Image (cartoon, rainbow, N blue to C red; front, side):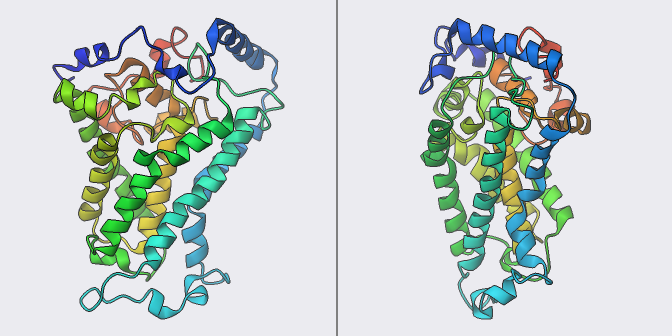
Length: 343
């Protein structure tokens, strides 16, 4: 653990509940209702596989690159676009924008599946009208879905900054040459390696933001830590400095470590990374969480530990680096005081 990590928590005043900023004040009544609701739902709802419909979000994240690379479908890219739009000789010409546009669209399409699935899950539509269990014992934050969606999509440090990064690195030719190639299909082994590499570099940057100095923490990561009980839409709500250090820099480093990806692999990795980063900020338990945790994959419960306690669980997509670094804590260790059973 870093030598000043204990002081990190002190940087966030205990007297301010930042979770209620821009949301309706939950109040003690809402906390009691949420506790009662969670106990009631576990006691009265029969086991059902319906909530597992939400797991469809994982393959749906890669919908666009899958459709564009399937040769037997009319959506195969060579049937839709003229060859001069995607054939690229890096020694003779500047990058063409088609790969960039499709890459951004891949993230958008993944989000178009994730958001309605989460909305139905949040409303209890996928569990007989009973809302899912909240991560934290005090209950989930109360907010209007459309307000959360608007905040999520319009934060300048979120998708706006990410789009600027993708556009500049792509069009200025800063990516490895293979990333501009449309040949082949999704290289799933490379997608996995990219996800692991990205999370490792992000783990290092995350710890540095917490540990290097109070000044760096205050100017970069502290704005994101005002959410001690995060919601799905808080994933990219922080600061420009935080996004640059913990997301964009690791993305650039990852691309230059894993240098043999094609455009479809880059597309699938980008969509899965962005959507997974959103999912781990969910205020609710997902049915796949126990399986994910057993495999060392990041869950909302694990990330809530970081937002609540500050000095553990610096990883996002994987638990492995925290486990190796001695900074992992399971939410079960703080149940039921802070986190609900089943988290």
